[in-house]
Image (tube, rainbow, N blue to C red; front, side):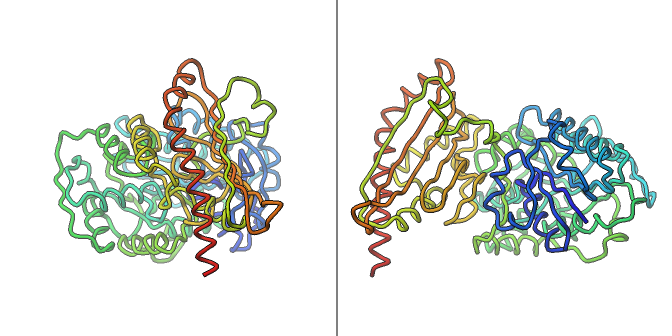
Length: 505
């Protein structure tokens, strides 16, 4: 079949697309900025088209001749995510109906409600989340309703916590458990959850594409275990080889306070932690298991799902991460190569260093910046700035990097986003800090024309202020930049020279 995958730059979509290819399907991926799929290993096996679900005029070409269309986008983390997702679902449904798509598949969330589920074998109009449910779950239920009402046969898969390397839910669980041997927790840690392994989610997503058109309904999907969140933390600790965790639930911790705590302790920023935490105040257990009648097979238990995720992290084999789809669209930003930066004031800090090492060694150091390798200068200043950003609700430094040594366009790298990468020559990062303006950091490696065993490192930091606050911000941080950026250039050059010396023996 010909499958259209929306959200291919995201956590689930980025894993589903190559699996559909492996299953023999022809895959087309819709992306606002196709460059963000340029460097993925499977880019050559799929068709990548540019389009935006909030701009319906961009969709007809993407939906042409499509048999199955996957709706895997979610605007979680944006202030108006409910409106944006409602709009995107409506445009998606209309485009699918107009193009004669034979099947829509949507991965949504659980619907916490006391209402009895519809157990009819071939129809399901979808349950409506109750008034007390979180905005996150309400939005998921609303999108499901829009797609089920599209006139196109639709399957909605409702999953709770997804356990897999790089998922936001797993990162929350992992960091809370690993960093806090004893913790005071909100009472919702006693609510029951039915987590599911990401590989089971992907198996279901791929398999339901083959269901007959009369199957038009939602399915609850979950793993083999039903646990409280507290039990999940204790069992994670056991699988990870940690000491038993002490957990004391208290009434005083509201979902809002809990979200701030999650934002400080884990890599997940407040904007995403808030809706996720709000959804955990409800129990999320499968009301029915009808999916097994259509897609047979055993599902993994919680312990095995955690073990597999930890193996992926240890082996640096994380395909996608939750942070890959967050942040503003890079296509909307002016690039450093734009003439005069598209107008307006800007501040530039430029550094260059002669490096007694070839370009290859210098590039390996450049591409490995961030994450566990750090930023090669004044670690305390970077840490303090990261903490200040977390306190302001930003991403801080904790997002790290997906791979220790390799980067792709569109990936998150601490508080940066990889905007452009030219292997062996250029790395350009766009800041996603809470700042009154826009900022970039560009690093380049060039050969020394006089000596092939030497190279030149160039570094450029650019800031486009927004209003008076932006100019005041730059003036305030300028003294620190003198230390941070000069030290960074010096230490990256030194790191390349040391790497080259080690390789030469």
